[in-house]
Length: 102
Image (cartoon, rainbow, N blue to C red; front, side, top):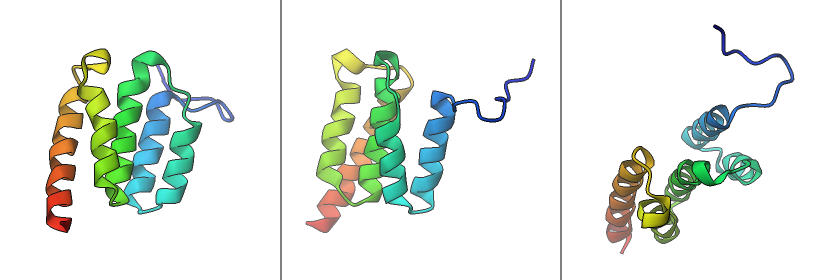
């Protein structure tokens, strides 16, 4: 069973996240931010979107904001078995980078 989308079909949520991640790795942060803002986020996808937003903020050197966003993922309301560990790791990295800047 193929999972390829027909030409012109909208991207899946996961494909959109991957595109944003690629833009972040290419240091095309403005494009990544715009793509993230266009991301339709359902309640069950909020954690993944917030982790991506945290990664984007870290890439932009906005560590305090990244920590605030990532804390939402690890909170009781948005706890996610996959995203919560990612958020915790990124929060630690952001805190470390913030301390280096100080």
